[in-house]
Length: 221
Image 1 (tube, rainbow, N blue to C red):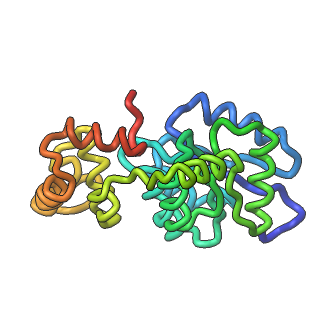
Image 2 (tube, rainbow, N blue to C red):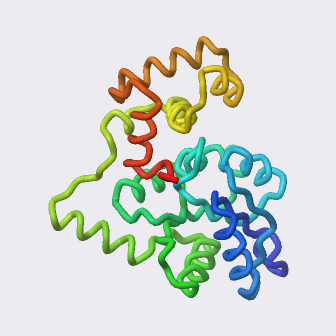
């Protein structure tokens, strides 16, 4: 925060409107914190974050079209100084690792108590990295059981652009719609689709959607 006399400004990104409304009320009741904006789609939220310049973004992972993990670098591009805390029901090591690798400053389970939400926000605003103890326990349990991260090998090898195309295809977008949303030619979108089908061994939108749901990047509803 550049001005220690004002409230810290927060922005919420979650595709469930009731979740955003509840978190807004909860956070605005916390001394020194104020929610200045929210959105249900990561791609649209990026421009707003660039305009509002909040101190911290609370970012859901599982969202349509663009996941929270893939949104991190785009948020950093428009607002490099912002702190980012991921919110997720997914407590596996794959999501924690991917989030931190992309530049997240914290990772909080959505099942955490309100007191921990406040702790995570304040700790992250102070310049620390915060990982929910519940998430840490889940990672440790997986390690002790000898389980590896669940990320699909092909999915982990995708470029950031391919991941964007993958999510749009997974929610049923056509090549033309992908080209429009990502500002590329239809031919380029078609080429990305062909590369994704080869890398992921998925040959239909339904198969892409199943993979996205299995990897926690898309809600089944």
